[in-house]
Amino acid sequence: MKIAVLLRNDLRLHDHPALSQAKLDGEVLPIYILEADLGAAFKYWTHRNLKSFQASIRELGGELYVSSTPLAETVKELKKVSAIDAVYFNRSYHPHQRVRDEELSKQWFDDGLAVKTFEGTMLLPPWDSVKENGEPYKVFTPFYNHFRTKNIPQVVPRIREVKFAKVTTSVKCISTDINTLQLVPSIKWTDGIDEAWPAGEEAAIDLVKTFIDEDLAAYKTKRDFPAISGTSRISPYLAIGALSVRSVYHYALKMQPNVSEAFIRQLVWREFAYQTIVHYPHTTSKPLNENFLKFPWLNNEVYYQKWCVGQTGIPLIDAGMRELWSTGFMHNRVRMNVASYLTKHLLVDFTKGMSWFSDTLIDSDIANNSFGWQWASGSGADAAPYFRIFNPYLQSQKFDGEALYIRKWVPELRLLSNKDIIEPDQASEDALEEAGVVLGETYPYPVVIHKVGRERALLAYKEVKNKG
Image (cartoon, rainbow, N blue to C red; front, side, top):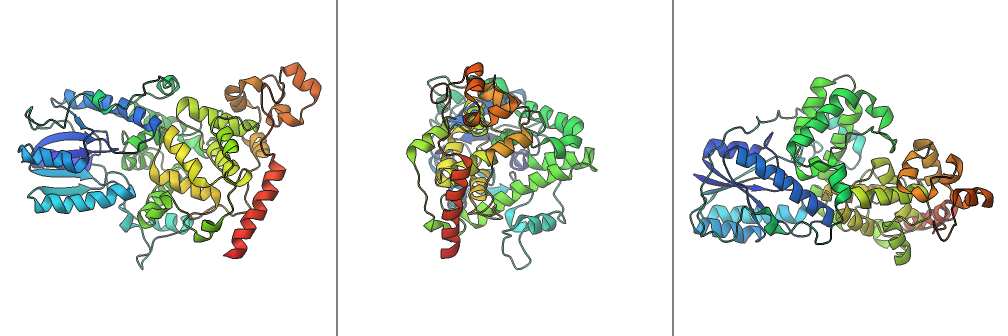
């Protein structure tokens, strides 16, 4: 039996349930079919990881095929020329893809193809972690407590030997040339990503092993400080599937059982985000809390653009947005701050922030992205209370006291003192002159200062709360 294994964000040989079963059942045709609407940074990250995965497949004696033709047409063509008898894949939980995959699976089965699906994205399928009455959780702590009582399946062995199917040249919609997908931007802006992020499964495994073996014990105390290496930095590899979340979960518990709880909690938070998008698919574009449909967003386009390019005049916010633009990544503590500032200080609709993150993050993930933005804006599951509005100045003092993070990403302020660099518009004229800072020229005045933004946000949120 010739089996097409449809690859999505699961570009790995370890713990790959679909590929593992396919190699037992017959000859394997691994094929990556490009989905629509990928963000620019994630496209490039996909390109680099496809190159790495292609090399791994070739080491096993096979070829990785790619297609930019839609999924239904690609499979139809493969069946037509008798290249495949079956379709296997790890399930996608992207709302549109999930519906489409279910419809196509039925159609393929009716057309005589064997179809098998597997869990290759989550620790547990979303229907395995609901309440006893079948309803999904909307608050994280009870979800977490319930989830930790569950047995997480062990990983499947790494693929080391496969019998690959041969494909005739008559199949025009597939290619072994990854460049045909056109995932690399025509104007090169990817140097920062290349420098910060080695691609591929082996790089991902090395990274997570080093983190768990050497740094996990300090994770709970260091993870909130953006200037130091205190986080795992595995999210880009989970997003593209170069890492299996189950392998990370089990390795952490095996190697560091006494200090892994804070890290495991974050893996389960990811699980909570996926469960939310499965049960409430509209949250990719609309608030979970329906009261927010009436929210009085200002949506000032000038302010939004200044936020996008790191020119808000709030150093911590600008540092985060510039890190994102340069590297395709942003520290999680700073993500919470930039999201709070956009939705609460600037009163810009969370979907606009979600869209920008989707286009610029290499760890872009529709479940985490929509869930995180709704959490920050107060409209989602287990959302931050409406009166919780991050003070970016206090956050800077607490988590970047030496201003190392700000100095790295907002270098025009680097000569200011640790106190003045946090809030330069409050610095003395002498301090600004000595540091070579000219507000309004070399660095902008704040578009909205914290006090004004906070008061305005509280009024807007109370209005929604009262209407509800």
